[in-house]
Image (cartoon, rainbow, N blue to C red; front, side):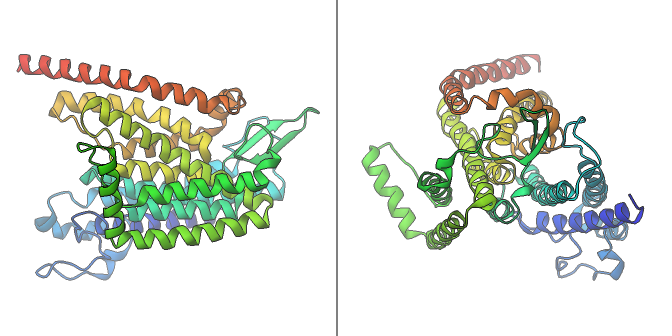
Length: 415
């Protein structure tokens, strides 16, 4: 690889890091004019031209420490530096076949290299969105819809226009020949014909309308009965001006999905895969939010985690979404217990752990997919097993609630 390529990618990544810093401080619930691209406070010193240089500009921004606190510039500097290094390293890793089996024939044909470049572009876009969402969530325990909703639409657009951007599915056929295709809705099983027909269109539209419904401003108060709760929920939906935007978005999406379905081919396969990935990713977290809140008598997850996982599912598909869903709690549980012991705080932002699990799934996709390929080959049995897990979840969450209470009492007695 020519030396100019990683240098150029490093610069692109650093610029993306600067854009991420701008959005992190701009889209917060309480914006802070830390980024040099944001207007400074009224009494603050004016920006200097060198301030706008990614990474190095933060060395000069240290003069704002009296306003924002000592060391405020360290994290944004690291974001831009790590984004630069990460984009360059990810390109080298993916273009050299890091997401493919080691036995896959090399050197790659031009069509395969094109596919790898599409995947790299989609993964960089997803990582950018996850960095912004994670750091805002870490700061304020909220994830703005402007990031997750936009990310979902970008993921759907990638899948529709560049279906090769979905994760790879490499396997040996009956003749021992390597086949490489993008991850599809039915993978690792063959694509079924009915998904090209009216049934597939109904599935796609159902996923889209379900996502739009989830975005509507709703309230649910069942203390006076279900009927009254439905009336109050409908009244708020009709009263909020934001509902009109969702309506226009729903109509636009229906038309776009119908056009893509009519066009058919890989574009429809890619979009259908992303739509189901969006619904599966957001749906499993939404189910955990509902069941967990009922079992633990408190909010188990924020709705921002639901929309974040929907965006990740749109980029990576439903298979990867389920993997991410089961990987994220391990890191979250370890960090949560450590946080409980040190700070006595029970609540932790879950978004960063979803993003960390998504990043790990992308990087280690080949060994992960190779080990669980047979599980997803069960087809419709996978959703049934997942449904059984949800039925057992209240017991698990109730046990976790008891464990947290025991740990808290032990800490109280020690102190």
